[in-house]
Image (tube, rainbow over all chains, first blue to last red; front, top):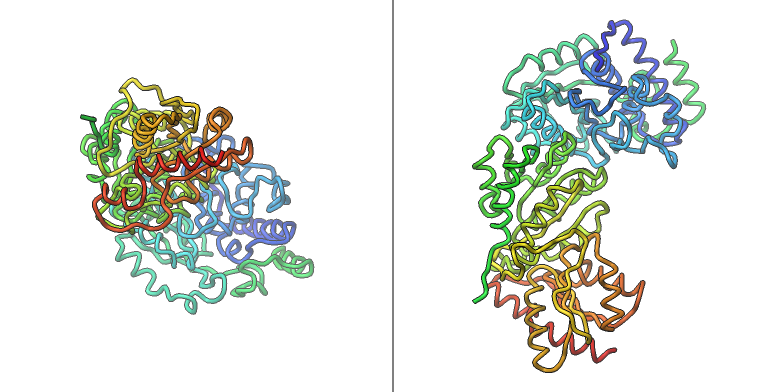
Length: 274
Length: 311
């Protein structure tokens, strides 16, 4: 079991490296979801290199903390993080979405380190409720972290899960909402207004924290607050920028589910290496 | 007088016993816990029982999360709410990752009666048999329910077990030996084979009795496991008797008849007749519904004659 302890400076430079690998992974596949992968880099970096106890050598370690990617289309960010942690060799990234690969187009439990099969939105928080209930039943300290998309909160099941987590007082469960403001087709405000989103989570009985999802200090502090909160699950609404780190992808719905072409890749990698 | 037992009640008692021996068993319910009899488990083991309310999508995905953490999960509600309603959650969350969740549903078929067509699950076997990794069992009576539930608890992987609301005739002895995926040949006769599941097994036996008084002797097979189905038993029946009649409390499409017809068609084509539903039913007394919609020993006997005629 490891708990990584990187400094914020180290995590910042690691984030750039992870972003480059996300784009390389998607480019090699020729398809995938860069926008919502890039927006969640700091969140996953904080979890895997600061917050969680996990075990790349034994992914099934029964005492591990669990990360559940409910927005499973953003699996490139999870795959590059898992590769960097040593769950599988980095070379596997170049097989993403290809026949015979352990890296499926949407996160699947077959991949070492992936906790849940996803790909149909709205189901991960419920899975997290099950995971948190089991941990409590077994008197384990293990905590469960679920990453939700903001557009994903259109799914009714998210709110079924939110109600049940509060009902069962699951203080070992954290939902992080990647609030990048853009979903598949358009802005979330245009497709289906989510606001007031923090009020919704509060009214469902969650300890609700609003942060800048690209600021490590904010993310780490909110996870710490979640840890010390008793009898309530915590929702962290992390305001992020879709496509973060690449000028022409930022806030661009066109890169929700499209691979960069070669020219765009070169330009993006150049921006990220500065 | 035939003894009867409600398979749902037998299930609740069996789960209670299993809960004593196996501490990894947890139960998830959806606000129908007295009707499904999982309240017996809930009363005894409150810490291992989770009511999710009538929120079946959440219920199935929570079950997946519990199973992934090493639990043997029994999730129970009515058949309509445990199959079609949360189908995507079952497909993505339980079937594809092959998790250890046992969906045990009650109030299946038209025997649910007065609640009407919304509550009468007659498409569920088609839906559930379409899912790879799922074992699908329709017990014929109380003793078979006990065996099926115990077998599910002791076998890794997802299960769908379909039970009834009403008390149904007991046709098995308590020491009856049940095996997942193994057909039970209850009666042997050379002229045709009736393959039935669930409540229709008793009707099939009554039909066979009636036919024998007319000089027609047929076999009766209890096909409790629809998936994985006992292909050998079906092929042997086709070869030995040359005509097959299926009987199920389910729509004609996608259930027992479809499964049997596929095996027969691929291996040893013989005439097949179906006793099944062809449309949605309505509110009413279960017995009268069975008569109106043709799920009776008489319908089976008639189908046997047609099948023999077609040889």
